[in-house]
Length: 251
Image (cartoon, rainbow, N blue to C red; front, top):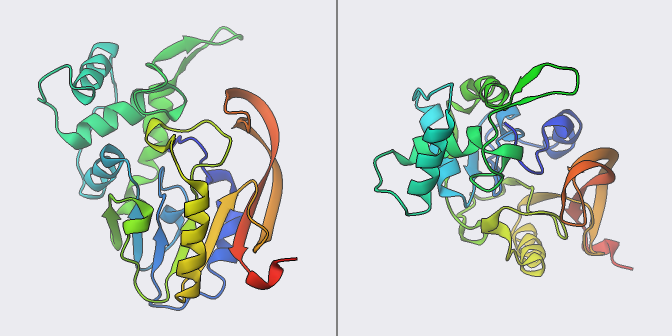
């Protein structure tokens, strides 16, 4: 699924590190599951959490086998957006509103980036962005069925099973954010990671940078349209990193 900050292209590299010491019955938790691009590739007992209610409702619907329209005309998109913004009576289900918003919005931005639809390319062809979005999620939907528990909470309110593996892909500092993450408190987040690490959980965090008591266990330079100056577009080179709490790393 197209999602700002998606780790789809890094999954094959970071998962072997995250899951290296996972035990057969050990829980795998994602407090910021988003597009589910990582958790879909993990087996066993899993919790997928996100604070976007409509995103989780959509994923729950897909896991339950719900069918959604593969074509989203602009009038349907506008109608769903008006319901979401409280300008129309609620006549669509929450999971359908989620589907329309995520599949029909430009740049994977839920009712924030405008309608994606179709556009002409420089080589004279027509690109159908909604068809691409639907095709991508069709490849994922069977992978979310089974042992995934979906939750809609703020990360700090999660009840995490004892000795879990926790992978965090939070909103990156100094980058473009979804509207529900614009006031994200990064200092509080890092303190939360420290606390749950001390409770016995194995915690990994994706970010560009981290406090000095976190060790970088993987990194890779990659082009990204999600730039560190808070703008979307272009192909900025950034260094993706995976961190783990390491109090002995403080200098």
